[in-house]
Image (cartoon, rainbow, N blue to C red):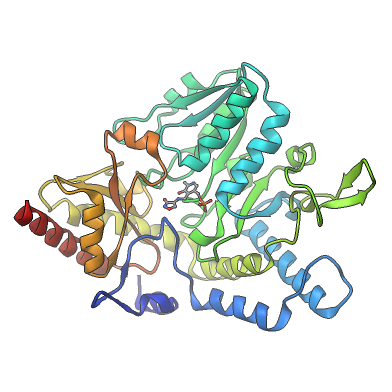
Length: 408
Ligand code: 7TS
């Protein structure tokens, strides 16, 4: 993509260890454009106050900013109503809210919860805990050899006993784009609800919750140019209305008696305590920014980056790339291993050359087991990355390979 987009991200204009920064860790967290930084600055300089109190001007401005951000999120994911958009701390909190709220109320002994081998820990452990508490059965959808999901396998694993199916939209390790819309149909056909972990999907492609027909969608602001500490839980109104809150206290109540209390209407009954006001404002600015560039443009750029990266990286002897080889089946990240070199060592040598990648299990230990790898390295791209960044990565990988081949 062009240098104009890159110039919106002030952090990218610096040297690390004497080299221009090449940031290839956006799947962990994206960088923030100046528009988001300035929106946060403006909020704190001019509008900061607590919300939903309606007694003074700053309070009204803060409330307008906060609720305005909710409307931006609604439109961005095409939710039917802002009542379906709950602000949370991020994907992890959103999924935990579903497991603790919907799960505790609706799951009984013998029920099945279905996830896949590629899930992030945040979409595994809440279900493990729920299954243990309720005596439910946690089942896994196996993966195809290329790291994709076959709908035939989904049809075999999801049964009328299944009550919840929860699948990531895009894998943070394999890059695989999963057929969540088709999986939702299978889930619904068996009477189960469909939860989508959108952490790696929503920042990178157009998502329409009504078209997907998912019951819940979770995502994080910090992976889509927004600040840390803000995320979204989308839920269908009919489900949220019947769901008990999981956090109790100020802001979420209607009437409080000595022994009984009642809750505010949606979405506020799920937002106990002073909300993440500045975070929401920042997320709203991030959404404006993403809309300006266009999700389709971002997605096309990432497919192109994935293709270029896989082609260039394949020229390195002893380099294994995980996940589908067809760039249209994946988002803009490439996870890999270099023969005989630990991924942490790869990442350290790359950092010495100004290149930031992630190494480790990527919070997906069951997937690491499936891949028969203890750890991997991952380069992940966003709209500000270019082919030159990938060239620098490939050069850095050759340096790493030579360095460790010489030493050992
Ligand atoms: N789900 C997926 C698919 C993720 O990739 C992540 C974070 C989460 C959930 C959790 O998001 P959070 O914002 O609540 O932390 N993934 C990564 C990653 O790949 N590297 O660092 C964080």
